[in-house]
Length: 231
Ligand code: CA
Image (cartoon, rainbow, N blue to C red; front, side, top):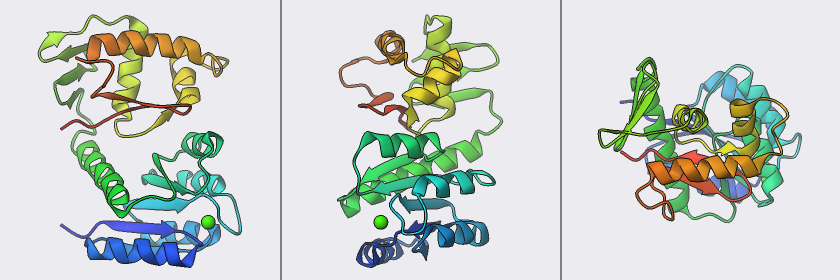
């Protein structure tokens, strides 16, 4: 198969060079941009498979760059941020970023995130029109409106089922509290994170063999939740 194309958007030259050298050594095809304007034009002309995007750019906010790219492409965007404030991550995720990584990060961590994103892309390309979702021991039959774990039907309430489907449809992506509450309950529920926690807890008790160390649904404290691709 062709090399994976990664667009690296970072205005800090040493960091950009480090990422470029690392990814090239791992056999990725790397393109770079040092500003928001360059990021948009490179994303449009190179058609990358994955975009690594620093949020603090000299000419415009990274969130604006995400919004612009999202107007035509659903390319996975992994945000790289020196700022570890939750508000920045949440703003980026709500604008359509898929994942985030906080500086300083290790090369191993960066490569692991890229591989996870690649797995997700391969799975979603294979299962795009499949009415049955499979992830480890979990199966969801969207047409039948049922979910199973190890062949045993999960007895879910309607809200738990919708939560599970929303996470499954976005497997590998971090979903913010706001995104989830708006999709499950509609506008006006943004601040009802308490209810979300309660439903998430009951869903996990049914789904996870040990809810304290979940294997399917990851918590991002202060940010949201993500279903992990298990297989
Ligand atoms: Ca920067």
